[in-house]
Length: 364
Length: 131
Image 1 (tube, chains in turn orange, purple):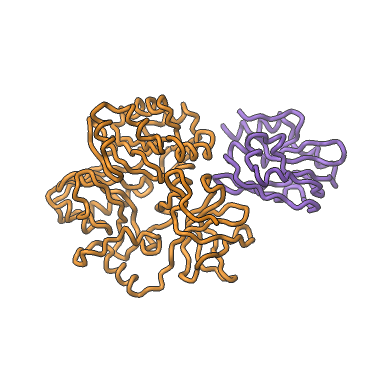
Image 2 (cartoon, rainbow over the protein chains, first blue to last red; image 1 turned 45 degrees about the vertical axis):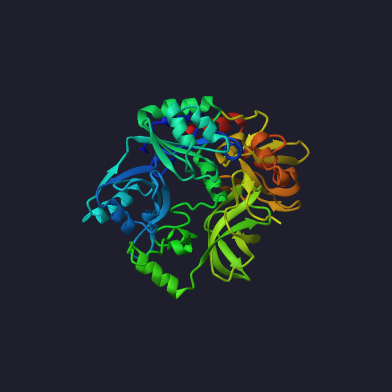
């Protein structure tokens, strides 16, 4: 039996089409994925992300531990509440998971990791924590609601206490704040402004219903995927996994090479890859023909397979199909993707495709 | 509960067939099928003049979720296709039995129509699948 989040009954009441996702019974959509997608780009939508895993890390050596555990460097975090996106790597440089880590103070950090990788993440983190003065505490009792869209913050403020709304309203992007029992972060997975709100499970239903009263539209996993794809955000398990280096997944920017003496797990392997060269590149594709690109289709250049799509689908904002692809360095401005035996022409672009309600690439 | 018009015939793979009475039939996918697939974003139509065989792939409907083959319920020749679906694939979602039709076929095996399910049988089949 798949797990149910504290909001399961709300999904059913809202007409959610429930599917099994990473061991959780989650809504794929509530009727129309396209309408939900547009609601987030143009107004406000919300997602139950309670299946994601909140892990609190505490202790005198927590900072040193995270500097070893993560490819990005938590030393960049100097303001309380500041968030950082990072990969957690194997020794060979393969990606165990991607995550967000929040700096609360020198001895307190909070990480949010993927649901599908929960068991191996916790096992890895616990194993690596041996030898450090650090406690690892999974917060399974917490629910999480992501409210996203240009009007999301204003609508979310209306369901908060005055203190929460004030704390949230004054917060910059990629920051989080604890207020009156909520952890409110100005983060998301859609390319729109908004919050991810960590809420005690017993308060989740009331918050969900109040957000509906504010006109926030319930949105399912389907549009969560099309929104993140447009926004140029990777999906673990699709765009990268243990067999893929962040350097071949468009995540070079998340690897903190400096200071050179910081010996994070996977560093030696990444340095060897970087010095050797010949890495595949990670690009965006926009389909020029009719049709739909999907994950794991061959990318073709001059009759030769030079890579594959890692994510793909229809972009509601562009009105055409888009994809991420991992390809040979020889791919330049144009390539083809093999779809049911036909080669469809694609333009090669640098993601994101769309953010903040606007197309962000040149479609010309 | 999805709509299942009484005047149509159906297949196990969720296509519908309307007998136009002139030796041709109109074909589309059922309301139940479009609900399962979700918002349509592309329909790959057959060519007019193409030969189709009962039970074989004749078109592809692509939703936000996935690509799905459409199987021809009958054998014959495609005499018309719904060009409106090129720019408005969502017609399949909104009017699966009317403006969302996919193709019209001239029958070469008239008897095949008798082998298709009527509305009651199809209703039972889809209800069982949901249980």
